[in-house]
Length: 195
Image 1 (cartoon, rainbow, N blue to C red):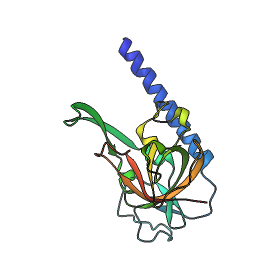
Image 2 (image 1 turned 90 degrees about the horizontal axis):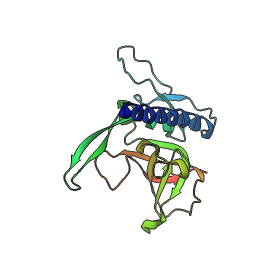
Image 3 (image 1 turned 180 degrees about the vertical axis):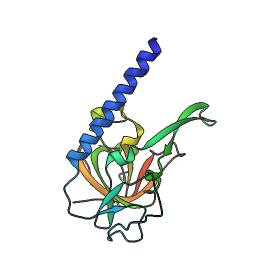
Image 4 (image 1 turned 180 degrees about the horizontal axis):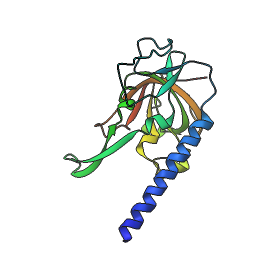
C-alpha cells in the first residue's frame, strides 16, 4: 500500500509539471503571424501545408515557421518515454529515451525554441549553454523536472555570457540523443541567439 501511495504522488507531481510546462509554453512563446506547417511536409518550410488524404498519421502537430526555422514548444519535446537498459560501462540500469514519432520528425531540422538559460561555465567551454523549460530552481538538475525539459545548446561561435534564468530564444539544428550519456537528450547544434 505504501508503494501505491508513493507511485500516486509521483504520478500527480509529474502531471502537475506537464500542466505547468504547457502554461510556460503559452506564456513564453511570442505571437507570430507565420503560417503553421506540418513537419511531415518539410520540402518547403515557407509553403502552406498540403493535405494528403491517403496518408493517415497519428501526429498532426503543426509548427509555425520563423525565418526558415520551425518554432518548437517544450510541450512538443515532452513526447518521450524512457526505458531502462543496463549500461555495462557504468554497471547500472539507466533510463534511455524513446522518442515519439512526432519528435523523431524534428531530428536534423532547423528549429527555434525559447527557454531559461542555465550557464555551464564550469566546463571552461563557452560554446555550451543549457536551455531549460523551467527556471533553475525547478529545472531537471535541481527541481526534479524530467530530462525532456532541458537541451544542450552548442553555440556556433563563442557566446555571450548569460545570466542564470535569462529568458532567451535560440535557433539551430536539433539533434536527438538516445545513447551518449555525456550529452542531454536534446542537442541544438550550430545555435545562435535570436534577437
